[in-house]
Amino acid sequence: MIRYQAKIYKDGKRYSVEFPDLPGCFSDGTTKEEAMENAREALSLRLEEARDPKWQVPQPRPHRSKHYYWVVPYEDVAIPLMIRQARLKHGLSQKQLAREIGITFQQLQKLETPGKSNPTVKTLVAISEALGGELDIRLAA
Image 1 (cartoon, helix red, strand yellow):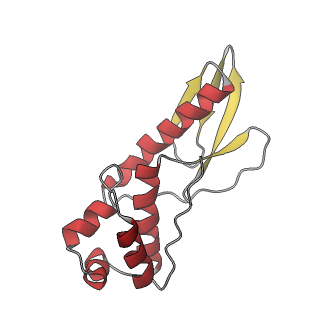
Image 2: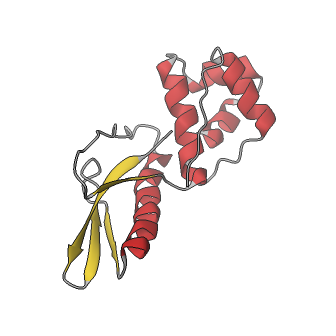
């Protein structure tokens, strides 16, 4: 699962949000709930930078404090990044995985692109089988 911890704190009359593992990623809200919703959107927008295949997705680190909360990006951002992480973990290039599951290189690129990916269950199963059953897609709201 792709998720990051956000620090949420009262800042005057508003709640501020910042992601220590993603410099420059921040948001706010008039209530804590609104701040959490806005945090999810900010996180998703920041992780969309992964559209550049050379951009390294920062690894989240656990932070211990009552002001930290786990935030999950939108599914259309999280799923492509989970596919990419699983492929990289197995040391495969996009061309190798595409050949293994019987799709074109361009189709695999699209599957790993946040905001453009929309894999079918059949495709996810094929990817999982090609990776030895190690594609773990878990989503949480």
